[in-house]
Image (cartoon, rainbow over all chains, first blue to last red; front, side):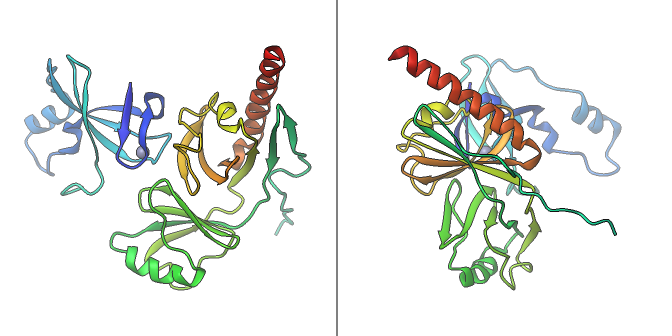
Length: 88
Length: 184
Ligand SMILES: [Zn+2]
């Protein structure tokens, strides 16, 4: 598996650390209902198809990335920096 | 105050030549991390003009005489070989990394083939040309790798990993030489 980092270019999977769903980017606001925290921390879909995950380019530019990939075909269709996103 | 003695990272280390490749320690030098504040690019560019340097694009390094500015991450570069110019600190987080990094140079036509045993990035001149500088692993060590000549690259790692880097590279050269000998 290879990922094309927006900064570093096409790189081997060993350079990256997998974190989990990109849902971690949407942290509930202070005082949010317990159900929102439950969703944020625990509840994940398990899609057959497109999924978005957070990866960290720890052996490269040290940037957090949102990777869009297809769990059926294994195609990686997008790799985007978390930095610079609205609210990031 | 205790008297601390400054030691070169490679003190006493001689260069090694094997299989037509020369592995040489590089002298310590001033190294400053320049991490741009949001919106600080223009101000930093103005301050860096006094060194004759522009902020490098990703995966590139620029130089003026012995002074370099090497891309090391998003909106970050290492200033090597000089003290930061006045006025830079207002536009970027400027931190002294001198003594924190140790570098070697590897010279010879087969350098990219030798490094391919440790670095999962194509370092041949076609894809790693003059002016290239990348962040990449050397085995498990996080490194800064620069092309500094048609047949020369530099590898910089945390100084605490200097002996490990030397060990790994000399091992590669020994095996590379053995393979060349067998192949005739
Ligand atoms: Zn990267």
